[in-house]
Image 1 (cartoon, rainbow, N blue to C red):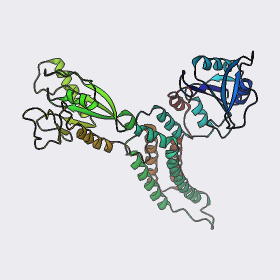
Image 2 (image 1 turned 180 degrees about the vertical axis):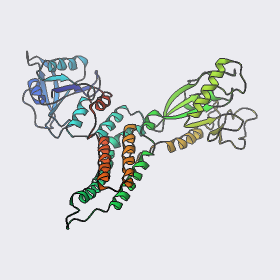
Image 3 (image 1 turned 90 degrees about the vertical axis):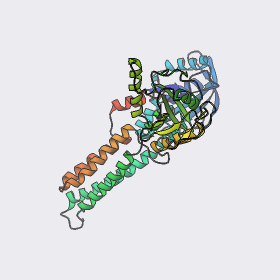
Image 4 (image 1 turned 90 degrees about the horizontal axis):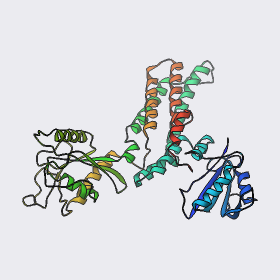
Length: 426
């Protein structure tokens, strides 16, 4: 395996650029640049020189981390350079001509950590989510996974399946020996069903993608009901054109916003006219109905009965004749004065929290959910068999599926897809 190098602290210019070197030739490469290396894990100032002509490239802090207790499981050196583009480029050019060294590709450092057993696949996925986290809820969920929260949970599943398998294997291998108790197959079936129920309960929870994709909030109602004005007030910027002319909004307008650690996508829609001869308006109405069907939170601004499950908003509450909240409406708002906007956000957030995963519990992504669901289904089939051999086989399949969650048995193509999303220095 070659030795890789890359800047891991972000693209220059910056005050400091942390360049990492990892692999079997990392210490030799660092010695060629800095001379005798400092003690392990002790930052020491060194002059970095080009081995070809001994010209000084930079004066930098050098830290040495020896395998196997490093981020990658390999010998690793960090060079804390001055963060100018020319400085970084000069050091990288010097490393490029050293035998056995090559620039890192996206995710290479984390991939080596996985290969060398420093992390498992769930922790690698957590790191990937952490790198792209934009909200506090995304950060917390990603940190929990990156720190091994899901790995520990999955390990308990594996241990329980192994315990079931051991009892069945004892029945298969040693049932004829007097000093070995025959496995209670009924007890194994009960244990398998109980674990399947627990796994399915977790699979049924909102997925982690919910935190990234955001809660879809759709504003709907008849023409001129104040949808565009309210959208602008909710996101505190002019995303939609506001006009007293009915039918100004012809197509849906999506506006992403982060609020109190939650990602939302607010959608303004064309007014739902009862009758229209305009084909463009008709298309807009069709898109409105489609958006309503897929809304997580529907804000209804019409004066007629609200669709089932919608948050019924009495808009334009500042206008004459609309000062009193009519019966049946959830709350009144005025985009012009700001009255009721905070209360409306509270109502939206209350519904959003019911759709998001709890951050104090294990959260699965789409890949993990699929594998966990498959494992649960296999465990349920244990109860369909009387033959210990078939029961043992189903338990083996279930265990192999569980192992794929943590990456103990997965394909190179899947790893390529995962680590291709990482930045170069990670």
